[in-house]
Structure formats: structure tokens, C-alpha cells
Image (cartoon, rainbow, N blue to C red; front, side):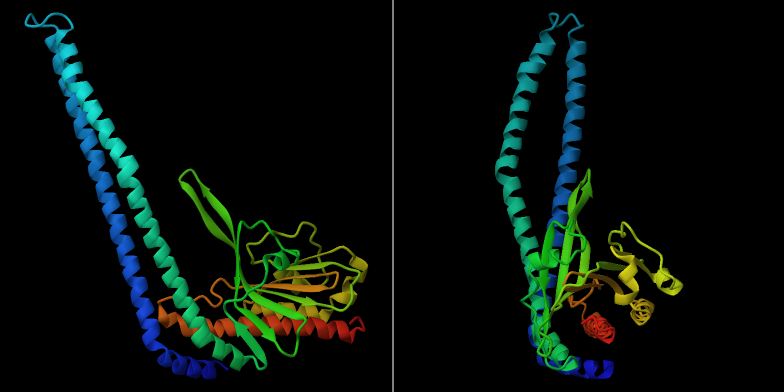
Length: 346
């Protein structure tokens, strides 16, 4: 499969080479513009800081000089200090206030707007590059690798549906794209999800990734009387609160499992199913699975899933890995359904 993907990739990339190169150029130009803006800002702030320090030093020297002059016979007591205050300190302070007002009201807002405009343009250019790459190159490859499938980069999973899957919902930003639909299985919904939470401290805040990868939900035709949660131990997501140990030590090595009905667990989570999860973990396919009510919900963690940038030398491998992630998600759903049917459950 990998060789065929490489062959298709080269063909499709050559067909869209000019368009992708133009977008790469725009991204690089915006990045260079942003870097220049940052450099100018650093230099101007440094110069302003040095100027303030020099002026403060000179004011202190002048103030000491006039204070010493008060002690000489040439001036009446306090006369030199008053001269310094009215002829130097007050006019200078007024000039500083006016300059600060102009900077705060006129110059700084314009710089901020310009900087935000550049950042916005740069982000949009990167997104446009990824959009073009996914539509022109990924779509034909995915639909070839997965027969009878339909791929839509611009469409994803609704936030409400994702939050109904029973995973951690402590995100403050949510984006979903890259919907993959199987014509032969309308019960399965599968999309890329990128959820984030706000992180930071004394120096500001930023958004950090909570989950990035494939989220899938398979709807059963009936409710099952048990809830099962399975989580790969390598994942950064929250640990299960009431994890239990199984007799399968190899499974325990890779996963945590939680259930609300231990007596029924072996019926719904067979040894063959546990062995399947172990094999996936050995292949570095990191899964979380929730089975409850009439749902089989899966999250496959893959931070680079269908994420393409101007470093084109990485894109070919990313397509192969992303296709493998899609296939692993489909096959895991299929295997769980087969096990339920083999045990006369579904």
C-alpha cells in the first residue's frame, strides 16, 4: 500500500506543484514580514529603555547639582531647587506625558493592528496551503486506499456529537475537519478533531492541545447493559477514575480499563478483543475507547493527522501515516462489532 500511495502522491503533487509553490511563497513572505516586525519592535523597545535610563540619570545629576547650589551663597535657600522644578522638571514632564499619550493613542494601536493583520494573514496562508493539499492530493489518495469512501476536508464532526462520546470535555477551543464516510457503513461517523485548553501563567496565556487525531462514533441498533472505558497508558488524557486490573497482564501493561458491571465485562470485552488492542499498542496506535448505551466511541491520538505545511519533504510520510490511522480506526470498529456478533450480542 505504501508504494502505491507514494506513486499517487508524486503524480498528484506534480499536477498541483505550481499552486502549492505559490502558496509556499506567500507563507514564507508573511513569516519574513512577521520576523522583521518582531525585530523592529525589540530594537525600538530597547532603544526606548536606554533613552529613559539616560534621561533619568541626567535628571538625577541635575537635581543633585541644584540641591548643592542651594547650599552656596550665590542662591537663596531653596531658590535653585525651585528653578530646577519650574524651568526643567515640569516642562520635561509635560513633554514626556505628551509623547506617551501620542505613543499610546496613535502609534501603539497602529502597530498592534498591523501586527495582528500580519499574523492573521500568515495563519490564513498556512490554512489555505493545508486546504489545497488535502483537497487536491489527500482526497484522491484516501478514496483510493479506502474503497467506497468519501472524504470531505471542509466538513467535520459537530461539537455536540463529540461531547456526547464520553471523553474529557474540558476544552475551550474546538475544531473538526476531514470527514471520512463509508458508503457501506452509514452507522460510522469519523472525522479529525483538534480540541484545546487555555494554558499559561504570569507571562500570558496560550492554547495547548488536549486532543488531536481521529474521533469516531458507531451507533448500534440497541442499548447494551454495560459501560466500558479503555485508555492507552501512554496518552496524556485524564486517567480513569476507577480503573480495574484484568487477568490479562499484557493488556494491563498497555491499557487502563473501567466498567460499571464487572460481571458482564468478559462477555462484552473478549480475550480476542483484548489481544487486538495489545497489537495496536505495539504498533504505536494509541487509542481510547468508550462503549456505552448504543455507542462505540473511539479516539485515535495522532497529532500530525492530515496536517501539512511548507516542509514538503515530510508530507509523503504524513499521508501514509494518516491513511494507516484511518484504516486502524475503521478496522477497530469493525472488529468490535464482529466480536459482539460472534457472542450473539449484536
